[in-house]
Image 1 (cartoon, helix red, strand yellow):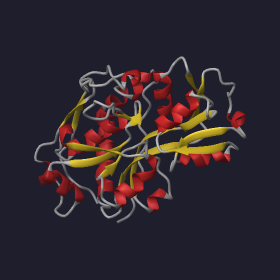
Image 2: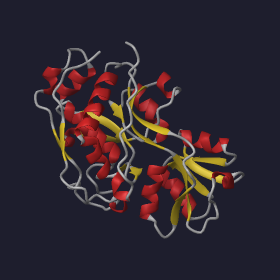
Image 3: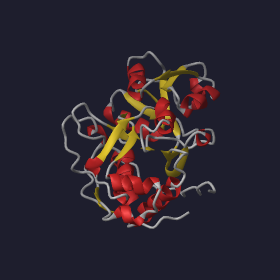
Image 4: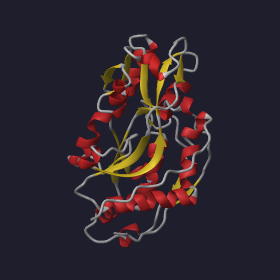
Length: 296
């Protein structure tokens, strides 16, 4: 099913947001891309759809991470989270006619992404949410809007250089993530924590040997601690980030997919990446091909 609606246009206001500065307290997010909000958006959606309801309400709740520099980070005195995931959220909200200041950002950790969607606590989850067949039996996942790979974060003086080096070692990640299953399969001893920041602290103080998750997330933490941490090993998994939605609202898949496709074609996706993850120095990749939505 296709839904007609006004296209959201995105203009780059500046690209000075750095990963190392993600945690600066009290800074306004003036350097993030500016999103032009669609006018009369509610009129463009079919009656009875989730998009129509959200557009008429003029507000949306989006679950994102608050502790992942470059992906989704919110300092103690920040008004809103910063990072690639919130920028994707702004693009989707703008297509509904909802400006950034009408988005309610709900902190979402890996272990509560499905419950938040199934219990209706959020409308969307955009939280480094890897698409898996298992998750798609519980919630909807549209995308991917980004593809990365799992690597390791270690202390700068660590001798770990290859994935084989972690056999028998303690490696942490967040509870409920695919990263723990993947590292266990490599022979490591997995340890789960509620947040990535807890895991990073364990690496810094030497309690665990390494942290593992998507390379994009690890680069953000390494950028914050360049003298103490480094990212090692070639990617040993493929993580496809998707936008989570409730299976009770299957019509959202087609809308999300169309909006992401438009963002990729218009250059809005590139601008969002360059203003966030791109500030680590990595080249802007080609946006990934988006999966077809399940048959209605």
